[in-house]
Length: 150
Image (cartoon, rainbow, N blue to C red; front, side, top):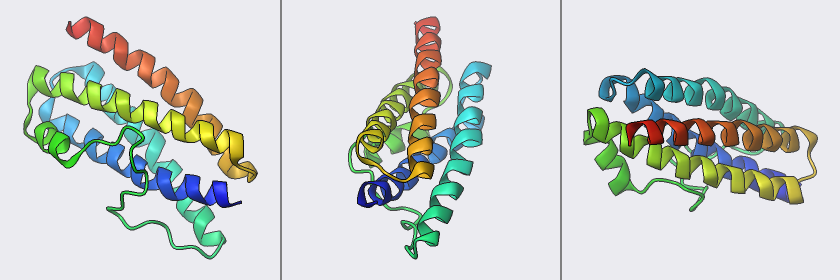
């Protein structure tokens, strides 16, 4: 159970950062494919956060604070990278967004793989499977968009 708790407590702030990055896209990109990536991040990760928070509360644990950094590395963007993303527009935003989000998703896949090796809780194990499969698909899509951008 400890591995499952660590997974949820690390993945929640990890997903929150992805939501923060995705939330920047609408005002900064003109590329509908980048907008679609950002929308899928929001549509997929917001409900996953809710499930993990509820699961933790069911164990009597308090979910990580809104701006926690429990995910450590795992592809998290630095504050400097986030600042660059917040100020970028157009193609510069698209390029940086895709680079950061691919790295972010790769980190989530690594984190989820650890849960699949060590976790015991069925709900968290299923969540980890969904993260691995969904984010690998998104990584492939984002790499395709990067190639198109050149």
